[in-house]
Image (cartoon, rainbow, N blue to C red; front, side, top):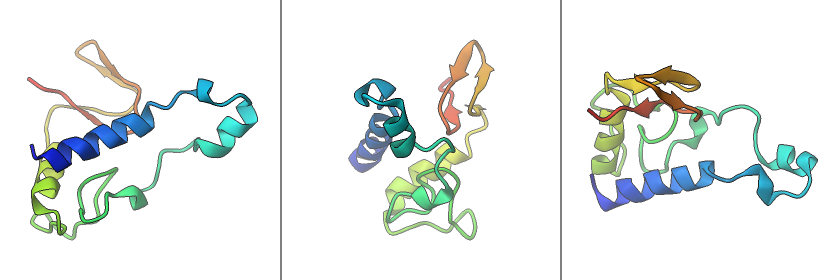
Length: 103
């Protein structure tokens, strides 16, 4: 995995890790944190596979950041994943996005 891919994954996980406690007022929290998962418009710029869903026309369609995109595409096509709000092999995915299970 390239350094850029690791950075992108770290950045996404960091943003997802923000807690409600950083906001003093629950109403303010609702304004800044969406109740729904982000749309496919949150694909990482320069890629077509990095983010929820993809914008690729087909399997071989990659963005300008080809190596990063190939990593994300491989992740998207992994057969062993835990969908959001699902438990598999005693692992619970509380995220909005599928989680890849390492064997």
